[in-house]
Length: 522
Image 1 (cartoon, rainbow, N blue to C red):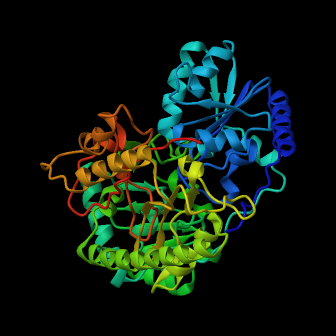
Image 2 (cartoon, helix red, strand yellow):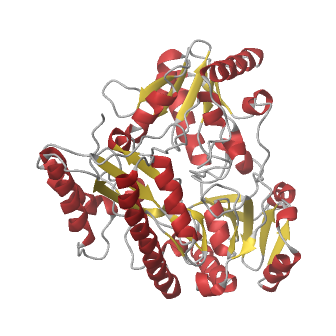
C-alpha cells in the first residue's frame, strides 16, 4: 500500500500554519475554519481537496481545523482520537476531543475566544448552505461575522495536486438493473410532488447512480467530479469534457441528457430567474447557491436520488449476493495464507492488507478497494480507522488479537466486511468482550421489526449486551452501503441519537452494515 501523496512533517505543518496566519493578518480576518469535505460535501475527497489534512497533518476522514493568531486546533470525534494524537504529536496543532467532558465544539470555541466584530473565514466552496445557516446563527448573537469569499488555502498551498482527469465509464445495465431514462422518470415524479421545475444535484454518488456512469476521481469511491441540473423535460450533466468520450455523450443524448462543461453551470443557474429550483441545502455549497438569482424560488429538500439509490432493485440485490460470495472466498484464501505465513516467519499488517487486495483482484469484475483496509494488530486494532503503511506496520505474532476491516469495489457491488481473530489463546477479558460484541451483532442481524422503524430504534439491540457490563463504543452501529458506489451511503444509518440519518425509515432493499465493537487502547 502506498503512502499518502502529501508529506506532513512537523516542520511542514508549522510552516503551513504560519503562512495561513500571515494571510489572515493581511486580509484582516480573525479565524480560518477548514472543513474536511470538497465542494460536493463528500466524505472522501480527491487529493486536491484535502485542505484540512494539508493544514494539520491529520489524515482521518472527519475533522475540522481552526486557525487563529495564537491557536491552531483540530476537532474530531472518538473514532480518531488515537490516530490524531499520533499524527499531531510533534506539530503545533492541538487536538480537541469532541464528546469529551469540557470540550467545546469548534464554534463554541470561536465564540469563547473571539471578540465582537471578529471575522471568521471559510471557503464558500467547502461550506454547505445548511452549515452556513447554522454557523451564521450561532455567530451572529456575538456580533461575529462569517466570511465566505476567501480561499486562503489556494494561495498558500503552492504544490497542491491538480484536479483529477480520469476518464468516466459506463456502468452496464446488467449490473445497475435500471436505465437512466427510468431513473429520470422517478426523479421527475418526485420533483412534481414538491412543485419543482428544476433540480440541482451536487453529490457525486447520486450523479453517478442517476446516469449509470462511474469514475475514479476519489480513491476507493467510483465517482467523478460533476454537477447536474434536471428539468421536467431536460437534463444536463456538467463535467470536464476531456473525461467523457463521444460514445458516452451519444448514449446520454439518447436518454435526453446534454453534456456540458462545468464552466457552463453558473450561466444556466443564472437563467432560472422566474422559475424554481429544488436543492439539498446540506449538499449544495454556498458558492454555488449564490449563483442562483433572487427571482428563482428556492425549494429546500433532499435529492430524490438519495432514497431512490438506497433502495436496491432486484438485479442489484442478486448481484450483491454473488459479490459477497466472491469476497468471502478472497477472505478465506487470505486467512489460509496468514495461518501458513505466521507459522513460517514475519508478516506485517500492510502485507496482510496487500495480500487481501491481491486475492480480491483475482475475482471477476473487481475494480479496487472500497476503503483502505484497516489491518490492526493488538493495540492498532483499537484505532478505529487505522491504516497500516509499509515500514510502519506492526508484525503479527502467534498471540493477541488481529482486526481486519476491509471491502471491495466490484462492478456488481460494494462490500464492507470486518473480522476479528485471535492469533493465540485469548484472555478471559478478550473472550468476554468478543462474545458481547458477537451477541449484539447477532441480535441486530436477526431482528424483525415493524414497518416505519428507524436506525435509532434498532441501535440498542447491538449495544445492550455491552451495556449490561458497563461497556459501550463511541461510534454508530451501521451505515448504508452503495452499489458499486460509496461504501458509506445515506439516507439511513443505525446509531443511538434520535436525529439525522438515524431517523430515516428503513425500507426493503436497503443495504446497511452491522458493526458493533469494543475497543481498548494499548
